[in-house]
Image (cartoon, rainbow, N blue to C red; front, side, top):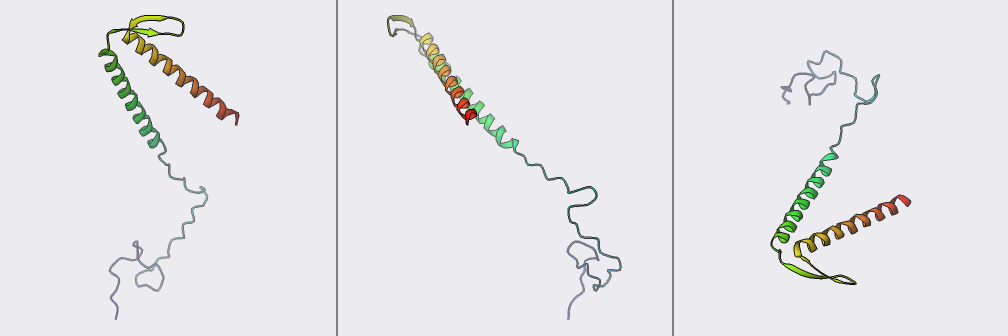
Length: 122
């Protein structure tokens, strides 16, 4: 002995076959995804979320490094002898550190240009 289905006919999960009691109306046609309007639009993927997180982390790292560099420069204000290839120069340690940081940044920028040029040539 079976109990009747308490759900109304046509409700999600109910059996739409004509043999079930209360299903006087025809069942809807199956959904194929194509029709006069064409296939339904594909759901958009949020690919920008990863980029946003990456840019935020890069910006946070840049701010952190900048703060550490500024604090290092502020606490090193004495005058030092800088030995160049052909001469010695007496300069403030702050100036020597800023020049070294600028030259290091220039080297990183040039290395990036070289790597980009190699990727384009492939």
